[in-house]
Structures are given as structure tokens and as C-alpha cells.
Length: 193
Image: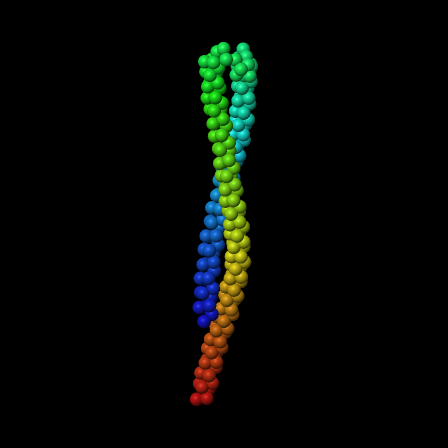
């Protein structure tokens, strides 16, 4: 009976050790996923900084372009508008500035949209990082509990082994006593004959 309890205890201990090993591997996979995520967030932050710099550069270029266009003309924009002597030139310049500004504004809008997209992706990645960190914490806690269970199970198995050794020693002592009593009875029987 003690042998059966010992075998069950040893099996439970092996199962617990396997569960701990699986939990450890899951924890390592979570750690790797967190490291990859931190790298990705760093890349996105760098990309976002580059994009913000590009956005500022584009805005400055647009301002410089408007200023240069104003300074390049012989007339101020208001004079050009009021001057009807050369309406064809006025319309060409106006159309040129309209196309140029529309292209610059489209570039600025595209950069702004990309920046918003990056912010959304970064928020999503941060949420995922929080979930992974929580999972890591839960797995570490589970592993700690499993280690405690393993320690308790090892103590139970050790106690069962001690009990089995004591029972075996008692059984051997009883068998020795039985042999001695049997030998004593046989000796007494020989004397009484």
C-alpha cells in the first residue's frame, strides 16, 4: 500500500516537473515576444521622429516657396491681382502657384496621415506590450506556484520513502524475529523429545 502511494507520488512529481518545464518554455517565449515588441516600438519611434522632422521641413519649404514666389515677381500679389495689363501672365502665375501649393498641401496631408497612422500603431503595440507583460507576470506567478507544489510533492515523496523504509525495516525485523522464534520452537521441540 505504501508502495502504491509512493508510485502515485512519484508520478505526480514527474507530471509537476513537466508542467513546470512547459511553463518555463512559455515564459521564455513571452520574454522573446516582449524583446521583439520593444525593438519594433523603438523602430516606430525613430520613424515617427523622422516623419515629424520631415513634416517640419515640408512646412518650412512651403513657406519659403511662397515667400520666394512673392519676391521673384516684379509685382506684389495684390499689384498682380489689380494689374489687368497682362491678364494671361497673371492667370499662368496663379495657376502655377495653385498647382504648386496643392502639391505641397497634399504632401503635408499625406505626412500628417502617416503620422496619425504611426500613433495608432504605436498605441496598439503598447497595448500588446501591456498584455504580454501581464501574461508574463501571470506565467511567472504560475511557475512560482508550481515550484511550491513541486517542493511540497517532493516532501511528500520523501516522507513516503521514509515510511516505506521504516515499514521495510520493521518487516525485516519481524521476519528475523519469526525466524528466531521458529528456530527457538524447533530447538525446544528437539529438547522435549
